[in-house]
Image (cartoon, rainbow, N blue to C red):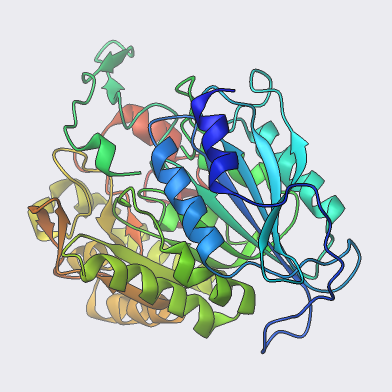
Length: 405
């Protein structure tokens, strides 16, 4: 048995396969059943971080066992680690309060890549067919590169004068092992956000990204019809991820205030350790109004973006990765007074909770100050990149606001 495969079973030291018969207990404040699925795509350099987070999950809130069809809470983990078969696992507490695991399905590691939208769809569809609960939440755990096309973040390209694609060189990042598109697997493939959305078989109460750069308006808007609430980070997420021993109970309780507490727990975890963090809770039903107000600005002022001094716009990136700026900060640079007032109003309705440290720190290094945070990042085509523009045009957000024609 390989090391990672052994570790997950050693970590979840439980009475595997034994079904408890205790009755379910539901959390106060929620009168119906909830299932939370954590999709851990860690067939990459994040395997040890995945193991640590699984231990935190075990140490935190785990629901009591319930028979399929019986009302109660259900916690499922899809775990894909290097050189091992991906597994769908149910965690539950038995009548004695002991956390148990139940392996629901084992997947062929060659056929089921965690970054493949078909794998995501099959795992989620199977999970919901087993446990058709009234409330559902989804945590997507892996690397993340926001709205960027597959492979671009690590190997950026642009358009050449002759129409060819020109490489800008492979990125060398000495801090790559400290931070966590969606879901780079062992084969180096990434799942783009448009494919991810198509793979989701149902609508969710919340979708939480434990992955870098996913807290952008492009991602949130793409998901606006697939979840009520969206939780993500505009900046990178450090390898520690979310503090699962603290957040799981609030995720199962559900509701805006409890999801806000999840964001606060994330912020407190990193702020207390002098590390960098941004996080926000977005109510998706208000994003259409935000899009309309931004579209009014873009109709007459989009041509101002290529002329901006981008040092005056809040960024959320290290080195030269200039693809993630603060949405509110960008709008301040190009909007009229009346337009900006409406955008701020719609941002406050959409972003219900937001937290950011005063700077983004990794191991004592301050990579950038965070002077303003609207809760959502955005792309700003300055400098222009034809390759990115061709991809960006197809995003739902761009079709709504026409940042790039």
